[in-house]
Image 1 (tube, one colour):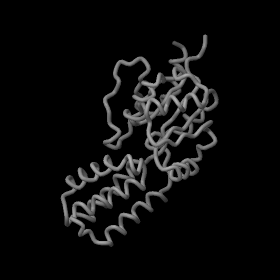
Image 2 (cartoon, one colour; image 1 turned 45 degrees about the horizontal axis):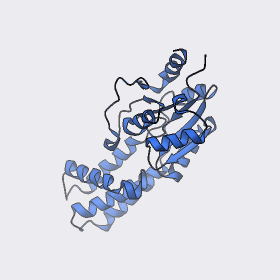
Image 3 (tube, helix red, strand yellow; image 1 turned 90 degrees about the vertical axis):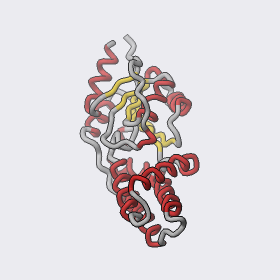
Image 4 (cartoon, helix red, strand yellow; image 1 turned 30 degrees about the vertical axis):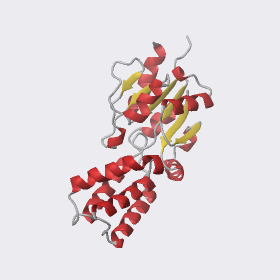
Length: 235
């Protein structure tokens, strides 16, 4: 019997290590700095709108987040935001870029076990330098056969990645915490998509699950992935 799966690809942020919680902590700091100008809920809405608007120009990651905060601060204060607040926001972004990596539970053991039998890829969005820093600090680098840092995760991008690694889409699996980026596009490209939810997920990454699709699975934790893959290989 030919095995169904040959390549397992993983998202990085909030799949392998913590990420979104640091954005939320910084956003709370942002709200405190602008408390005299606007309510937190309104500020959050304005910031999210700026992030959506700026994705095409800044992409994903901390740098774009900081620029969107600065833009929002200028807007909600009608250009009266103090320079000291701008400096605080820049400093907050720099702190985020220096923050140590915290692996999620069971990640190293799970990825390490699968690396013995499968090609292992990292497919992540974000700033190249920051993602390289996080991967180096994670200690997981040697487990991956390929690293793909992309500006967007679309079916076409996944198809290109699978072709570059000489694997048919139906023999590839993508695992991540974003239904919009890590699950639906690879399934549309012909691969398997596994959703491992995280406590915090950016609103922009929300999407409806492809419930009932034969190549879609949801797991409560990453440590259950080897058992799922074994079951798929036996069917």
